[in-house]
Image 1: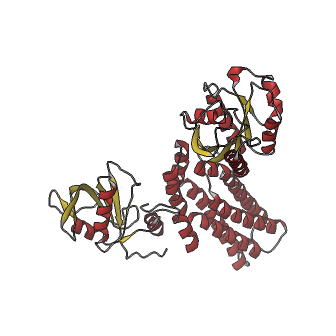
Image 2: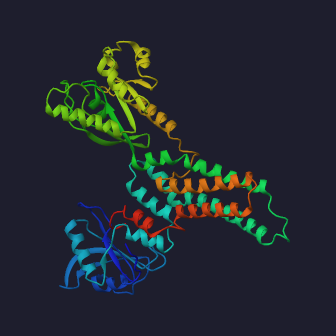
Length: 459
């Protein structure tokens, strides 16, 4: 997607569906022209920036009224994109919004590409690349905690940390290059001191990298599968975690034939939970497909809730299910505790092969709150989020930080091996470039396009 700052773009900025209010957003040099062509204010007065106006929207081609609306014009550079922006607040029906957008597009305006408003904000210096990504994270956030982490990144917490490391390294490079260029006037560099500084920056990067797993979970949700043999209460557990009757529950084994996916909020941590068919020898073709799909989902899962009927003896099918999660992140759910534990909690815990085992009654929602706490504590312990209040890195940040760390490690080794300061400076410059890729200060068009193509049209 090429950027042309002579273009004026427009799009519907609110999601599809009926709503009280819908927004059409316009950005570019023709934004004020659009106002003149399609808007008739209740009171005739000069258009001022950052003020709300009320009046009629009209179709300039057919000179017919479209809707009563509010309109706000924001003059560059005091706007989201850094360009002239017009936001039209009309009624939220799809037909109304489409008619308004058509009227706007007839005024020397083209339809915006995916993420083009945010891309312009980035290219005009209103956001860096991490902040632009935070906008997308904020839009997609499934829980308050996910939104909170995105907001920290939008505030610039991650950028500030990266820029601080980068500036420290630039200062270090300058010291080394002065020592090289003015060898006779300057005593030279203190290699031990330089190594200490480099090693300290490596530690800071390592702390940031620790947040990558938590970042993945809070951005995308943890892919979680509920597995177990038939009739142990998997669907009842799904309903209890959701606190709604989402899945059909009967006393007949094999009710669930297909994988059912929902996002469950576990103390602010989003889990993408999939309820699967019970694992056993299938009785018919539909159940066979369901069992195969259950095994496929299990193969792609990152976390498991293994359900066992604690009112009955553990059998070969239970053990088969437990073998599926050997060496993987899992919590064993001992369901139907209202019917009594056949072997007692200690007996079932020994069967769990080292995984946390937790007794509940999904039918009566007894122990669900405690189970959620257990899941959160266990998952958080497996995916450290680093220090409190720290922004979480995503996979793109992680790759850039890993490149920076590798370059810094080489520089540190060069110090240890007594190599020429030129080699140290070269590795430090590589680290500076990698860190610049995190914030977008040094980044290719391909990466920029890849980031913004993930956005929706209108953002």
